[in-house]
Amino acid sequence: MTIDKSLRVARGSISNRNVLTRAERLTKLAEEDRWVEGDSPLGLPKVRVEKVSLKRKKKVKQDDGGEDE
Image (tube, rainbow, N blue to C red):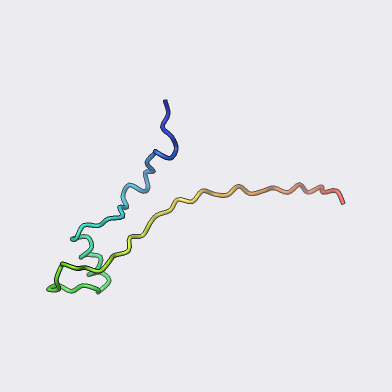
């Protein structure tokens, strides 16, 4: 049997997670200068995670050159 298309895992989306660990959040905030060494690691602001969307190419409609007038 084959796996349904909705259940397959895309290879490009494996590396991006939508939940970061505290250490990952601290490094991202430090890169954006929103957190400085010595600040409390508790109650951190939210960190936006970029989503990679793989869009499908739309099919181009080809018009016939010989239209009747």
